[in-house]
Length: 125
Image 1 (tube, rainbow, N blue to C red):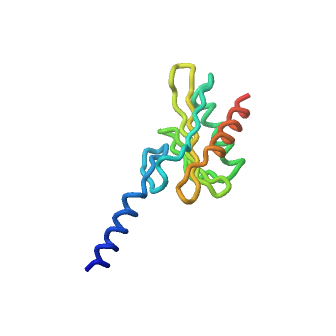
Image 2 (tube, rainbow, N blue to C red):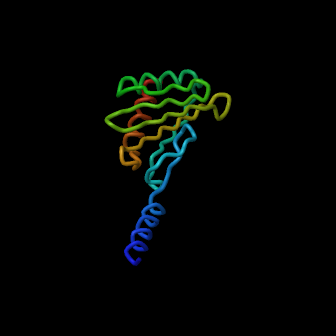
Image 3 (tube, one colour):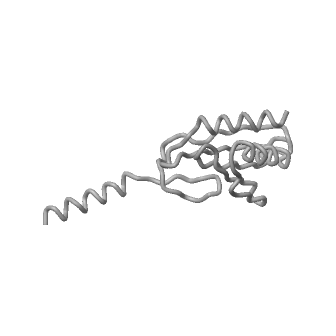
């Protein structure tokens, strides 16, 4: 009986210790919820121009796996990491770009997100 309770306690503890994070599509996925994974940039460009630059950057660096044109969310894989890029309009002349990167284990990869954000900014020049 004590072994059964110990197994249940360990299983419950493991379940509570694991977490979920929310990606740019609005879906929840299992992973480390407290790791920084998102970089935001703002540009004085139209939404469509930033969206096309983000799409070209993902194709250049890895693979584009999803393209939701209505929500302006791109998904892709770069160096074995999963990326989400969201483009939306903040003001009539200001476009916000959010780049989220996660490793296979669910941990955030802010360095890759910053690198992709920089490459998108360079494409907009």
